Image 1: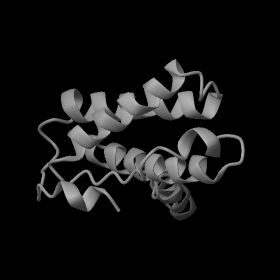
Image 2: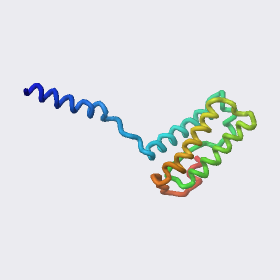
Image 3: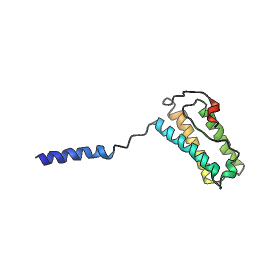
Image 4: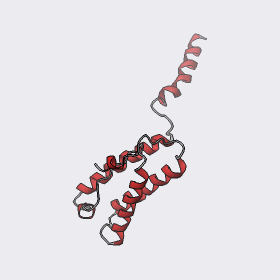
Length: 129
C-alpha cells in the first residue's frame, strides 16, 4: 500500500514538473517578445548583403513598447517599408515578412492589447537611436 501511495504521489507531481518552465503567454509578453524580435530583425536586414541596399535609407528601428510615441514610429516605419516595395527595391521575402510582422504587432498593440499596455513616457527622440 505504501508503494502505491508513492507511485500515485509521483505520478501526480510529474505533470507539474514537466510543465514548470511553461507559462501561458499574456498579451504583454507577446508584445515584448515581438518588439524585441523586430528590432533585432531590422538590424540584421540592414547588415545582410542581400537587403542592405534597400534598408540603407531606412532609419534604425527601436521599438520600446513603454513609450507613447511607439505607435506613430511603427506606422511611419511600416509606411516606409511598404513604399520600398512600391519602388521595386525590396521584393525580398525577408523585407516583406518584416512589414507583415510589424503590421501584426501594430494591430496587436492597438486593438487586442490596448488596455494591457502602459506607456510610461512620451519621448519620441528616445526611439531614434
